[in-house]
Length: 320
Image (cartoon, rainbow, N blue to C red; front, side):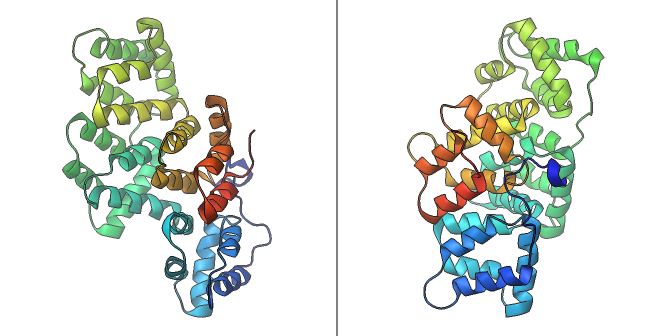
């Protein structure tokens, strides 16, 4: 991360000592009973890079795999969250995508969330790391597991060849082409949506959305909701929302994961773990702006135990 420019809630610990931290964790797990409090307090107060150093030092000092030890001592959602925090960001994205494709049935939500929200540079790194790790082509794996325009847009996003900057000359034409493809005629030309939304820069798309609104009287999201369905709709909406604001997209993702009966804990864990050092401060601000409560209060009301304690520490303050 870019040091102080980071909008994360989790920062590197100033007087970091990997050996001392490894000792604390070892003691927390040794003997009868586990000191979960000590584990969560320590790990949420270290950056991911520092956690990686703790893993290495732990192996050197005790000849044991820290992550395996944590898995052996912890359980349930709390364990899943802690393991997510202990995994390097690139490896976490790669594993998440692999599990989404190779598990029973495809977890399309994970494909949508990661591929719509990561930068082109991050996507290129993910594709390369996936090949190194599994000796497989991520694009082929995604293609083999999805179909239609949903597949086409995922493949475009995996190319990570978005244009940069704003093509002033194309703003109006892009808006008109989208209008003709959607609202203007019966049946939607999905291919047009897929090509434009997958290849233009976020700055360019924001201007296109404004022009589209003037032309059609509809927000782009409204048209997509009306004109498309299923997984393609979810992906198009995610791409549009991320072009507008990645933190707002994640604020909404967290809200929907927790509202109503039952919590989608996998989504909560994925977002809180992956954004805690990137833009969780902005996500919190957007959450407060968009919904009638703070992210902190929603987590508090929706989760319990050590899992809740760790999530609240990652969340940082309450924007009441």
